[in-house]
Structure formats: structure tokens, C-alpha cells
Amino acid sequence: MCSLYNLEILNLHFCVKLVELPVNMRSLINLRHLDLQHTKLPEMPLQMGKLTKLRKLTDFFIGKQSGSKIKELGKLQHLSGDLSIWNLQNVTDARDSFEANLKGKEHLEKLELVWDCDMDNPLVHERVLEQLQPPVNVKILSINGYGGTRFPDWVGNSSLPLLQELYIRSCPNLKKALFTHFPSLTKLDIRACEQFEIEFFPLELFPKLESLTIGSCPNLVSFSKGMPLAPNLKEFHLWSCSNLKSLPENMHSLLPSLEKLSIFHCPKLESFPVGGLPSKLKGLAIWGCDKLIAGRAQWDLQSLHVLSRFSIADNDVLECFPPFLL
Image (cartoon, rainbow, N blue to C red):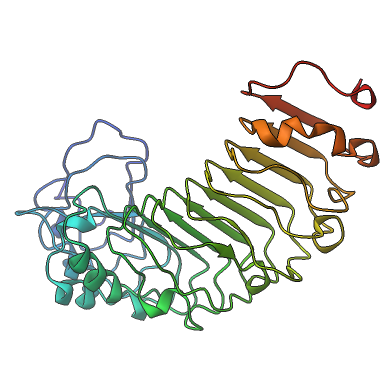
């Protein structure tokens, strides 16, 4: 295949059994589009940086020893669209991640950074992530499997003014993240961050937020007191927050756009806020929340005139519905 010097597009999407690319991949000097989505490559071939005409590279897999290093990305100056970087645990020198020059790839709109295992070197993870700052125009950022105890400053300051979606998943050592002000963020998804120090969640920092998911964050206890300025929030999902005791105050008036609410396995949550639930709620799911379900007579569901989906499951206290639910 590497004799196809005029090849411009190579689509290997969903080739799940593919284990390697051609050794001389660097010979495809006119390649502009390389789609590796949903493959499971262990590494990229050597000298991928020679493919300087690449505009679209969906995935880059960092090898342990013989494969391409992350710094090869620094030579691909014209990448645009989506990019996922896998096996970041194989980067041991932060200088290599600096040479990748992600910040300089101004046409990237979606960036996914993925570590796999190796949680024993949090300081190395922190130094590597520090040098992987996305370009200012990035709209979607995902950080998955990161082993550091904190995020670098660029995650939470004004360096990402256009960021619309932020995913933080499976970061078991993470204790702190700098949440300042995200003026454009519409979706926030935080999952499996068991040590995340997020006792009071600051909804007011996300004025355009439309979807919020928090899962497996046992340090979440409540939401910041006062007025949660999230007037555009439409979907709110909470699961496996074992110490969560209260929802945002005055949800019925301060979250006026809420349409979907799901609460799974939050055993310390006892009741909905005073005033009940927002009137635009269309979908409600309560699973594995025995204390909350025990107080179901106070839910005032008859006021939810547009409710069309209602689910209760996985609990030990429910024997019957109150009459108004029949």
C-alpha cells in the first residue's frame, strides 16, 4: 500500500481487528485524511510526522518503545476537526508533549486525551498534561484516565473561551480542578473521580449549561448555596454520589428549563428542594434512592403537567404509590 504515493484518503473506520499500520506509512506523502476511529492499534508507525499534508487525523496511538512518539504530532501543523490521543501513559518526558504543539493547532475543534492504567506516577501525568494545552478555538475537550491529583491552570481559566463540552472521566486520583468561569460551556460530564474535592458544586459558573452529569463522585455533598444561575439547564443526571444530601435550592424557579432529571444510587438524598420540581420536567427517573423514595408523598408530581416519562426502580422501600400517582 505504501507505493500508492498519490493516496489522499485512507478510511479504516471500525477495523476493530487491525493490529498495525504499514511500517512505511511515512511514504504516503500526499495523504490528507486518515480515519482510525474505533480501531485498537497499540501504536503508530515511526516518523508519522513526515505526513505533513495531513489535514484530518482522527486518532494517534502512542507506542511504548518502537512506535511513533507524541512529538511527531508537532510536525503535523495543519490538523483540523477531531483528534484523540491514546496511551498517554507511555509519555514519560513532558518535553515530548510540549513538542506536540497542540496549542498551535488552531483548527482543532475536538480534543480527547486518554491514559490507560499506570496510576503510580501522578507527577508525570501532571507534567505531561501541563504541556498538552489545547488551542484557543477548541470546542470539545475530553480527559480520560488521567492519573494526576490536579489539573493544570489552563483547564479552568480563560484560555478556553469557546469550550462548549467538557468531559472528565475515570480520573481516580484527581482532587482539585480550577472551576472559574466557562462562558460558552453547554455540557459538563464528570464521572468516576472518586477523590474529587467537589463538596459544593458551583452551578453559577456555567451560565449557558444545558446538560450536567455527575457520577461516582462521593465527595459531592450539595450544590453551592444561593442562586444557581443555570437558566438553560435541560438535562441533569446524578448517579452513585454516595454522600449527596441535597439538590440545588429552589429548583422549580431557578432551573426553569429543566426537562430531564435522573438520580441513581444516591442513598443519602432524602427529599426534593422546597417548592418542588421545575414545571417543564418531561422525564424523571429515580433508582436506588431509598430515602428519597420513602418521602414520595411530598413530591407533588401532580403539578408536573408535561411529565411523559417516569421511572422508579432498584429500591427496597416501595410497596405502593400514593393515590395521586394512580
